[in-house]
Length: 297
Image (cartoon, rainbow, N blue to C red; front, side, top):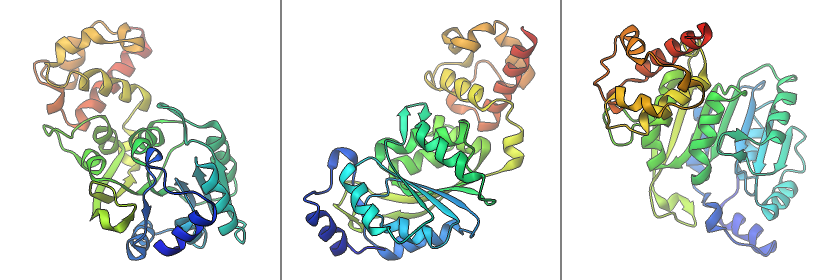
């Protein structure tokens, strides 16, 4: 792990500095970095994905514990620094790319690397990262609903994102991210982080958050992409009653015309508001819709 002074020296030698637009805030409290690593309980056969590896400070420690680390970094200069710092490790795949091709798709080069490496690792697939703010939410939702299934996530995010990850029904932070996470696993805020543990100091607090996928919950979701569409349909009109929201249904959901029966089958009052529904309620609606679509109703 690298101290603040070491990171500053590496950046100065490369003629660069932290890029505010890319959300580059380096975690410089080594005790907290160790807490992030320890909370992940990495096993020697696990595959770890790190997004925003920067100068490779966290990456090096991850590679000492995991079978393989796939480290993703968008900044060209930081990638070159990381390559030099990690040159003695042969279990790291360093990718110079944006983690997301678009809001709903993880970069194909990353997916290919994950699929290839999973053939040679028998453990869990874990995200461990100090996530850039603009990447955090869409990345985590993709890892839950996309073709790559994540087992655990141990991340530092801005506290606003952390609050949305664990939000309960009826609260202002409750939304698509909190519903999806609760639908397939369990999420917990481990520690609130003050701006002083980062360099440069961000203007807001951050948090270390843990997500653990739960197989029992996962098997109850018939179609994760359809669940995401259901959540999007209703939560974009979170304060309307459920029944009026259905007129905005698009794509597959536009094929469903018997929404009153859907709500009845789920035991949900169509006069309730989306923000009041539990994650289990959204799963029930999505599963009934899945059955109706399969039957062509």
